[in-house]
Amino acid sequence: MSSVLRSIAAVCGLLLLGVAANAQSEAVGTSASESATYGTVSQNAGPFPWSDLGITASASVSQGVLDVSTGGSTTFKLNSTVSSGESFVAGSTVLNLGYTPSWTGAFSSATAANGNLNSNFVYNIGPFSGSKNLLNVPLNVPGATTGNLTPSLNNIVVSPPVSNSSTVGGPGIIAGLGVQAQACFIVCVTVASANVNFNVGTQIQQNIVAAPAVTYGDLVWESKSQTYSASDHFTFVPGVVGNIANTFAAPPASLGLTTGQTFYYNFLPVVQLNMPVINDAQVSVPASISASWNIFGFGGSETWPLGNLYSLNTGAAAFDFNPDFNGSNFYSIPLEYTAGYCVAIACFGPSYVTPPSGGGPTVTLTGGGVPSDSGPCGALLIGCGMSVADGPGEPGGYGQTNLGPLFPPEGLTGMVCGPAGTPDAGECITQVIPTSSTPEPADALLLGIGLLSLAIFAPRKLFVARV
Image (cartoon, rainbow, N blue to C red):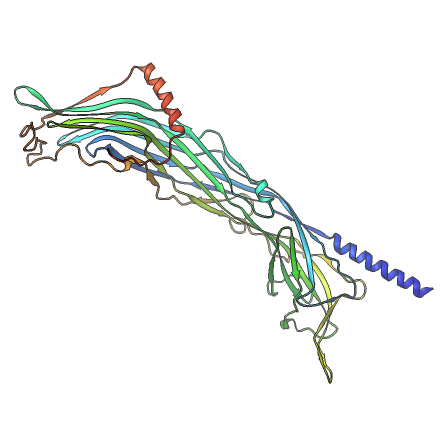
């Protein structure tokens, strides 16, 4: 009767061991945060359409402070059952560690993109030059620019990029400006004139893209005690679609095991996040321009439809949000080692068997022995900051390339004169008079509103062929 009871107790022990092994779980926290600050990019362009007569633009643009944070945790659970007296076979025995992510995460730019845009009408004809300011306005993306990272981080198959783009139109102007160039001796005669009519708007845009790539896995090692040491031999095993398949490997010879000695097969849950974050901002001058001219008896006209006369992009200022999170506990399975041996007709390899009773997997508190988490700024996990280097700036728009000079070059006297063969040959410009045609305020307001509507939907770059 006692033998029957012992058998029943042994069976119950094995069942309880299997349940315990199957129920053990470990939660790995995934909290980290970082703040990125950016510089300011400034550049000039113009004048357009001609190098001696047209519209100039100067702009500055910067991104606001960008905060990135993650939280939540990932739960790891041993899904394989290990029995007392079980033999582990190198290359064949597999222990499956399942994982269920429960992330939170977001990026936010409370002080979003801001910039300044200045535009002038200028002329520089021989010794005569002048300038009229058209726009000098600050621009900003109001409110916070945010993105929710949680759904992407919790997708264990693939984490899609998360983006947010904000575009805001600013003030604009419609006007006609030009010059009359005169040759004066006793009376003044207009020998050249040019006019530029334009609708000019302003626009600022910010784009933020975070592309998370999450790797779940564990660090596997074998040791003579249930401890973690930096000198142990580690193997990283990545998981796939919610499961990490740990294939048992023979312990390294460096352990120096002898027959009857107990060693431990260990694995530590690990979560790694690799997330480049790209932030760029752009200010632009959407404009349509028409021009007409008559220079020493020869004239023409040209039109450039609505597009970006000028744009300034900060460039894709990127930084990496790359924290690693390690479990505070690791799984540890005791195994008894028996050295291999040979008899007359065959040789047998070493064996690795769980203890006949009281063995099986256990979650062991490490007492600080496991490696610490590493945050996006090195050792710091929470509230670390970094400065993102200024880019060179990326100017664009059809106004980046002017058509060269409209007026002939200066002569030896420093004056601009009519070339030989023109109706005004020999006549030299002695004064330049600016001219203008600006609509009434009410008309300008209505036209400005219409221009801003077009500016919001204007293409970022437009190349216009001369006709």
